[in-house]
Length: 265
Image (cartoon, rainbow, N blue to C red):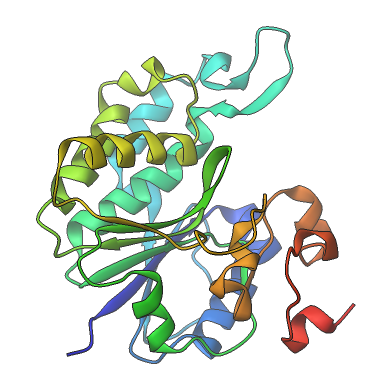
């Protein structure tokens, strides 16, 4: 019996204008008709309409996010300001909190078999088969991710099995780090680092907590998203430079890709 798949993402008004509207249209065009999307927006509600896209106001849905931001409004350190005055995204807890509150709110509220987080700066350029969604989160696995050998995972795409016995515990554990500010006891405060810490904690303590590295058999890369099976259907424009270019760079690819999207300059 086929599992029920759902996707969640979030964006602010600037992100909506820069890449969000394109993300929504591409999702509706290329993802399987059975797959729904929950899009948490800050400010303006998107104009794009689809019967399988549900829009939620992020701050109205997540008052604890509003409280977290209010607590740290005047603390530049929690917003990525380093001791030398430079900006470091790894320490920008406030920026990445939006993603965590949207994910955990959706993950704890909806009824589905599988929930995929997908960053809104992703372009879906080809039809995504249901079989690929089964492949990237195998049965019996709680979470799947894009691992990198010597640094934190790339969390532009992450899968969660909502019917797993430890799902609620995992999501509530993650959320609690922001509710009581214990997040700040960690050496880095961005979502990918925190995800890895929690995932490894659960792997170590629970024998039935299985995970899957989507990129395990792909060439090592700083951009595992496009070098994995996902790169047959999607491009993740992570970072400002790729967004400005409108596409990931040729030297991001560690293997030859035959899709027309990657052949176009």
